Length: 609
Image (tube, helix red, strand yellow):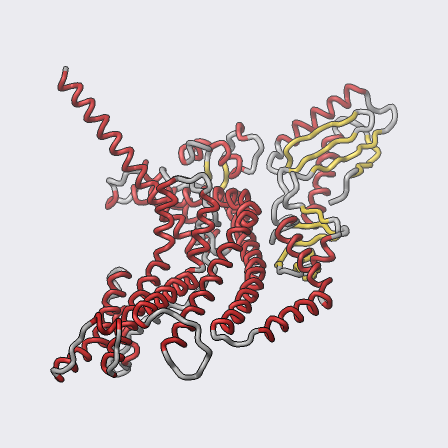
């Protein structure tokens, strides 16, 4: 009995340990995926410290002394970043200090005492050696801060995941900003350390008048100014990005999650198809099929799976190849239930484009291909929208960057005891004149920010009706939007003009309903025939569930019938809506003729669209 209890206890312990390991692995995978998304989404394109070392023929290769860092990084490119920069710093310190040690040893009269060097260096040799020690330390610390900047996203993510904060979105937004603005952060930290080290080695800092004679006091002042300038830029950009993060996250949060889940559906189908192909092959007969179905959905904060759909042709090819590997020309309800056990009804409803998943009809390959192409277009439009939005936010941040830089210019003059009243007077005069002359323009800029970032009446790819004209949103900037008409004419409209206009956004609207009034000949139709007509409409339109969702007979006295379309697809245009009307009239006419006599009059009562 005791042995059996012990075995059961061991099993429970093993199960709990395995569960813990799985949770840890899931957290690691989630963290890694999110870090990859942030790095891909990073808008800061920064030049690397060293350019890749191109491999050439021995005759073409030219070695330069100043490109030693490039050579070292390419020599140890398979090593970690810490090891590569450790070797680089070691090599730089060796070049700066070792020759002086040899010189001191050969002369036999020079005694290197670090305490004396720091406190008081009088001889020329001591001054040179002291400067080389200072430069080596500063070079090393800049390399350390460079690595910390590159690794900052990884370190911050571990802290966020460890504490499992409820404000994950804001924290991840701050982490993204720190990563994007890491250049200012590491420069501020590097110059701050250099200023502290200069105070330790060369005495306490004192403000001195500016001269063109190079000395340590002038250098310390410049280092202090660079520290304040980069630090103020980093803090300004961090605060502004944090304050605007709520607008950025909430504006497109629902739409991004919807796109990510739809993309996840096709990503999982693709993965299952490849897993199925591996299982069928003889060399991979031991592959565990169930593991490949356990792909977890992560909504993320950005548009995920960037490599899934890259073009129209690639999207078609991906769907065709996936179904070829599965050996299918359609998906049944049972297939969807097997692939997506947790949410199979919603997935089936999305793939079948049907409001009634209980029918369980087979979804043909051509319909799935059309849905994938529609998803590709939606993802493309969302990426363009986010790109244009970020440009507007970047312009807003750059304005504050210029203001902070101008303030630092005045600080530079103050540190060197120069007269800066001219610049402050000029600044206030300029601001006064600018406000007086361009006051209306400032109001217009504010209106544009309000229109695009707060009201946000449309996104790229949305279908609009403005003054009874039909447009598709093509691009956006701060002041104008480029709208593409049904005749492929590109129209530029000012946001100031659009601010006061009535804009109908078809893409964001619920499924469109059309009301048809049927004129019946007097005395030719009884009440029972009208009820029979209602049932006939309902039954016939159930057969067209891909187009219509429901039929409602409002009033037998007025004989008005409402048809609600299944969706306002992103590709719908004015021609599409006109074709819908014509098809609807034909459907109503064919159904009604078999039951009642009409006056050939079918009137659309809500012909707004």
